[in-house]
Image 1: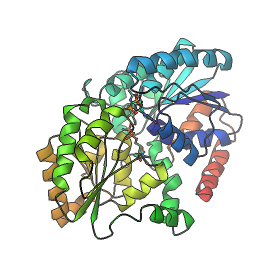
Image 2: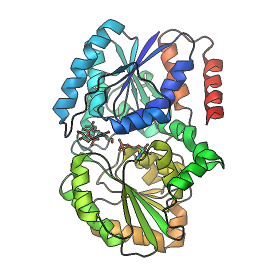
Image 3: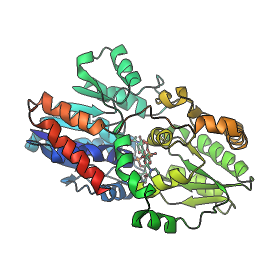
Image 4: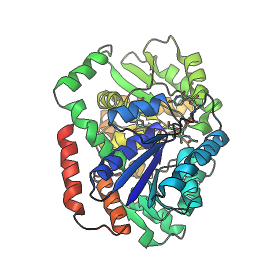
Length: 393
Ligand code: UD1
Ligand code: UDP
């Protein structure tokens, strides 16, 4: 039984890491990992944190790459690997250009496709762009849809995918979070190293953690987000920490508008463990990221989603996230509201876990084995891997 996992960006690597670890431990499974290198530094840092060593690296990233560049290079780079390896299943994750091109490559080579994080939808092809289309294209060529939530399963059913092809697994981002959580929270050398690394944070100030990178916000959207952050920096009781994504379309407005402002710390993208540490220290998180919308509720951190739509309505419906758009007045008003109203803050910081229970990887690997006719001895082996992973952190 040969499983080829293909991924290329930071969030894909974070969410695939627990699955690759579970595949490695499963009996009778040959697991091969191909990274496309759609991201470079941000991918490599993640591979290192999770001790993942890819078998193939297409190394496709170029500065300011276009969607056509990525798609073309992934298709031509993967084709010979698909032809020679002939995987029983190709696993792809999410909605990036890498995942859709890899799913198409598998389809062209008549391999079955397993789609991790299937069924997320906003219903708006322009937001997020191009991810909403990517997810839908991937779904068309997918054999096993691994839906993180019941809502995602229902979205797939509504599009006509048979119930028998969908499995609700939880989101593997929660598995990943659990893999690093102990390093970050338990007293010990890892925790001390993180405290040392971020010793420049001012203990008396409330930390507002920011991330942003969506293509549909390039230009005006980012300028508006930066205007909101500049206005918020006037509050003396807050410190804004913003690890700035490496996309030049993000870096230019962010550094142009926010450099040199007191209370705003523009820092480089953080490795996953450091970023999770920052989330645990935050009072509030402002983001347009998919993954952060899923992680923050699990950590009991209120999230303001700086987008017009979200495919992760579970958190918003649970009352632990708010959709605030990129309008500066709206962003500023919501931040003031939460920081100044203890009751409303407490209601949002209650902690909720609508996205998973940390066992998504186990469910996905089990399902793949059953689909490939290898049900025997599965559960004990995978349970062992989980235990080993828990002991390792
Ligand atoms: C991509 C995904 C997006 C995902 C995001 C996660 C697509 C179309 N977009 O967007 O869905 O949410 O990743 O972060 O697949 N760069 C570096 N080093 C890196 C990474 C990026 O220098 O390690 C720079 C390069 O100039 C690169 C540019 O960022 O050309 C854009 O990278 P790209 O992967 O095309 O887009 P993202 O905005 O990162
Ligand atoms: N993340 C990280 N370092 C950072 C910022 C984010 O490791 O400096 C993690 C974050 O915890 C989440 C993932 O990266 O798991 C989100 O990635 P991103 O926002 O790039 O993409 P998206 O989730 O929107 O596709």
